[in-house]
Length: 506
Ligand SMILES: [Zn+2]
Image 1 (tube, helix red, strand yellow):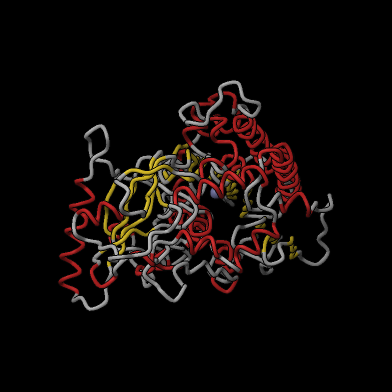
Image 2 (image 1 turned 90 degrees about the horizontal axis):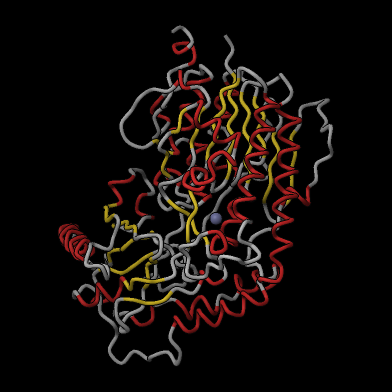
């Protein structure tokens, strides 16, 4: 018996939003109710680059190292290490490479992180690189029946969109989804494959831009605003696209519908973690440190009010990368007395606010025993932090070892934390424990850790297990479904399926 597997990856397809829309999403809800709804969690931090890398390779970010925590103590200007993603980090090691080596025919469409890609024994189409472009690797004699719409496939790109340009962003989302679905349908309608993969990216950006219009709990929500249905209509469009892809693949295909992370609000308040550390004697501010004429919060608000009006053009974004003056202005390193500091906050950006991040130990001159004792002390302080309702504020305070093991674990801060969705990690000192966010003004949506969708069409293949499914489990699961032999030690993840040969005998 020849089992076939189709993996449909949709960036930021959130299980709570899917649940709230119910039967308006006929195909996705149908897949959920006739298949299995697995409790998937994202990687930490729940960002697309580390998440899809973990999907493709079956290993955690502590193995592949594609993560991006800031380190403010790095005075050489390297506080933002950046993510270097190259095909050499993936080639030969992805789940489709392993399947292809075992003789399975694979069509791989638009996998994130990968450009220009490499040939497989089927179609490989990649999107990205610098400059971003579409690259096709086709077998001899293979041609697209509908020419690729590269412009639509590339989407509207990153950067912040001015409010006046939002209608253009909605059209860009629709055009991109249509081009992705057309490519997927013509590819998966063929019968010459065992494994199909497609990644659709636009829903994430749509939610980043329109979350406040969608979410009645968001402070900027306007119940009768012009964009209040954009997110819901985006989900309906994705539902339609998913239905077309499943129909194109036809009967007898196991479908895995998968997101890299969920989506929710960008925090609009900040909890000043460095101030908490300062109040507990774990961080010291330089005596006589020159107070900036203008507070970081005010500066951020000014920047984002401007961006909201004018957007960020690609040229402006490029310039700000080469001359990150305003990022430097926002970084707190200059005001900290590092010799007298034990721990300090670390997150993913000086500009955006996140409800997840970490606290890093300042290690120079300290023994491992000292650092261990310090970690225990900081965890106690964080766990003792209370919200305004008198309840513990942090949703989780864990050591990095509680998440992952691997050679790149020290890219993570020692302590990893999560706050409620509405609350971000702030790093300002001297102005109390609470502050206001600013980024939600231009980007009201943000990623969530616990709510990515993972629906599998065939309940018979699922192996019962306790606890959540991880993104690292996808690669070994796909290979098990295809009855490809592999060494389980290659992966951090563990298959959540029985092999198809086993499951089809009962
Ligand atoms: Zn995103």
